[in-house]
Amino acid sequence: MARIAPFAPPYEADVEQALRKWMPPGVTREPLALFRVLQRHPGLAARMRVLGAGLLTHGEVPALDREIVIARVTARCGCRYEWGVHAAVYAATVGLTPDRLEATVSGDSGHPAWSARHRALIRAVDELHDTATVSDGAWAALAEHYPASQLLELLVLAGWYRTIAYVANGVRLEEESWAAPYPGR
Image (tube, rainbow, N blue to C red; front, side):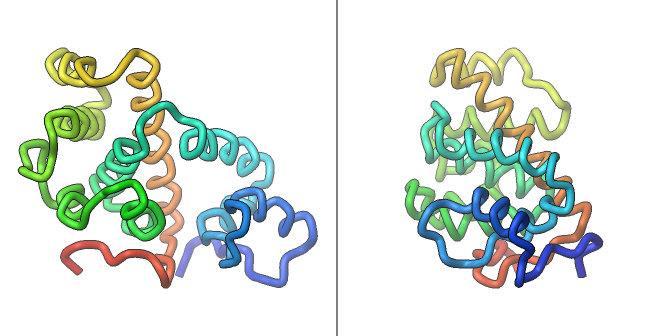
């Protein structure tokens, strides 16, 4: 049971309107439990939505790389909720194959599923997770593949999904019924 209950339908008109802003146009399923919890603090939710939506729909980082970062950050944080949502919604559409998806949970940067660019990405995410910084060697490897604007975006993306993991784990969100199962369950 979540520590903070997500809003449940039927929603008040202002809650309904705010929740629909979180969901992509045309999506008919209920808004994510995460969004329904965040809406308990409307001002915070509105500010978070802008950054979250911007990272997902207006970023410069290639979609596959974005999803590798999200999967790795959420896996390292033990956030089955967000890992499962992204695995179900985005993985196949961006080319994150089942073996790569599984490697975001159980592999390291040397896993054979990763290209040189993705090895650099996984290494940097792991260093950020473990030390809150990126070593000179890991930064140099990333900089071989990404311009400065994308390097900045990668740092924000990793930090954003760590924040999301903190929220989902902290309130003990139950996994969405349609989410991808976390490897090893």
